[in-house]
Length: 302
Image 1 (tube, rainbow, N blue to C red):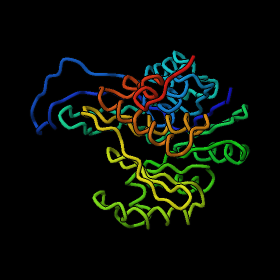
Image 2 (spheres, rainbow, N blue to C red):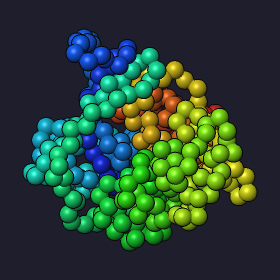
Image 3 (cartoon, one colour):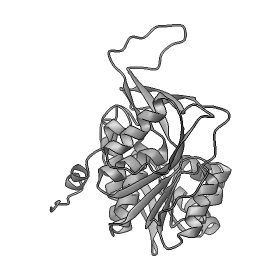
């Protein structure tokens, strides 16, 4: 079985479902919230382990209640936490998420220590598959450079120097609409597919790797040989988009490393992300692999 290593951010999410964005100086009562671990690479590692891959996560959390909860959640799905470092020097990042159940949007307030610890020490496994999210830059670079034969995926959710530096080191740069727009200084018009082409080509030219641009509910865009392809997403009623991008990247890593072609990989990853937005919370909303395959028209044979 392939060994997967996810490197990057871990946080703890507290999601509060609301029917509309609250007005200032008012009180809102809700019946329940959802709490679970979050963070791009951590969420991806959870999904990959849940889907049966031999997965390890490398990142840093605080020596506190939320750090313990993140570790225990990963262990519950069989994710190896040998390389999860517990630090005394800062508190685990906590995200407070207002999830608007009427339109699926969310507003996030992040409580994050100023003195985040960098990962120290070595990762001693030789992974066949690597996912990085731009956090833990030095560790990510080391792992990618020492395992050039591995299939590697970069979750480029937003524009920051570490993402740019890692972009040319991975097999697949899977970036958001925001990253594509900000990096190129141009604007993708979702109503005009042709507006994506020059932005896509600029990314390929600069990073010299395979590029996929995710477009939220509109799907994802790439190029196969000489054909530009927009792979549409599954149409659903969204109630919470928290972690949908993380789930897409985790699913993308799963399918591309299990020899699905790029179009099917994107299509099934779109389905995984779309199914997740129909439920509240991040890890709580991750679909089973069998459900994704069934919706995608595949028959699971055990």
